[in-house]
Length: 161
Image 1 (cartoon, helix red, strand yellow):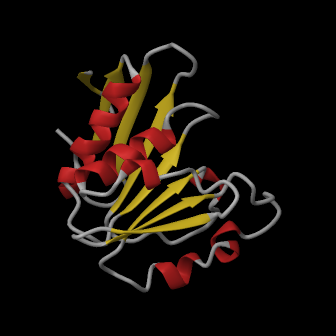
Image 2 (spheres, rainbow, N blue to C red; image 1 turned 30 degrees about the vertical axis):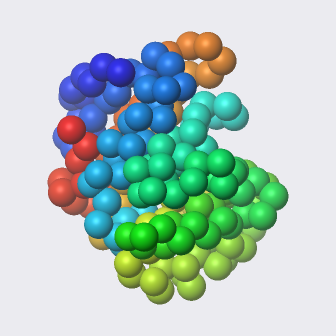
């Protein structure tokens, strides 16, 4: 995994050459979490969004064999020793519907200590994100290396180094 600097402020770019690199980056992201963060994941099918999420949860001492994509359930709740983690997948939400409402996002965010990870977050429109929000975009698929950009939408304190 190689880190490069992006020209835009508050963005870090990581090159993950293997699935293990992507998983390891998830672990590194977890180190910066204190609770109350929202992580917006963007990327195509098979890009590694769930694998990155597994890395985050592994670092929180959660059994990664229990972490699955919530494509059909829409929301999975993982209770870790540090805080609850809500893993949301908006892939199956029709774009004409309010995705945040469909998964009860406002109610989920009432728990200000929970971490919320949202796959296909680009389906959230006109949503007021919490103060501690990270946007993570994964580019690449198949056997290609992944370019993963991490940007804090509201605060520099969430940067991954």
